Length: 239
Image (tube, rainbow, N blue to C red; front, side):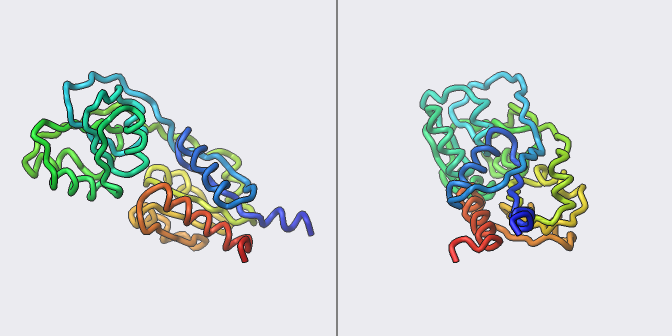
């Protein structure tokens, strides 16, 4: 019986790039309160891009990865998409404004308090939301500077094998590109997708083995809480 129980223990699949993936996995396990098998399957590798920092006092960040590629803030204003990004910018000496939401919330925040100086979005090569274009269309001066690339990685063998197993797979997904490798697999194992948004969840609606959940708020804390809730439902923890 011990072998059967171990085989059916849910496995947490982490597709976020390092080091964010490891940090998120630790937060899930700490909140769950018990060890959880983890397969690290980062879909992307973050690769810095050499760039020239503009002379700008108003910067836009849509991820902590963007902050990591930026210089010390030295008191400059950072317009941040969410609280995790804002925390990273604050630690780097920026004067932070957080939208505590998504790209739409960030655009609304900036337009409700439009700065007089030009804005610069320090971003990845692959991005969503068309933030600079939307702000420019609204009459603000805003440009985008690419500071890092997100290079696709191969799906690890451990995930391929788990997809054909019996153990439920719990997969928090933060972006469409981090889900690409999963969409290319076939699944025998029960698949439990925890998506940060309906857009991220949409490509999985055709997978019969998949259960889809979407967080009510697009941030890491809500993703952690929903992931923990799924783990508890599968293990009976907390009953």
